[in-house]
Image (tube, rainbow, N blue to C red):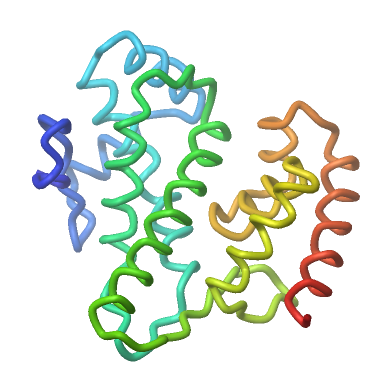
Length: 209
């Protein structure tokens, strides 16, 4: 099982190192429009729909996780580990009113951020030393950002402007495009772009203090 250590996940697909014909056929059979139906079915208690949903979204989750952290000495969490932790946390949100793919990826971004931070802090407690871990955003023109400094800055921004903090989280941790974020927040793309630009400027200043 893909998430065999997660007791709530009874039967999920195995994420292959190589793309098998079976998995490739299964993913090809699912259309992006199926996401909303699968989310609704999962909400209604259909575990098979949940497993198909993770198969459908796995490539996006993998891209987001792989782009998130630059491998550094001492960091033992792989992109697969990060996806596992994020999915385990998403499964725990069984009361969430899932809406669509963008909503799912927005929540996945939050779960990845929390999982990564928990991992970094846990390792530091064990080693009793500070290990800097940098986030690689995958966004053109963006430099790597020290993870915990970014987290602290985001927490501060969330207290001032939760919406702008959410935009940053979805962009940096979920690898989401402006159009998808606009869909999640119910805003126009131009509005999201303006708020994203303002948030980046605020963060740039906050991270240099």
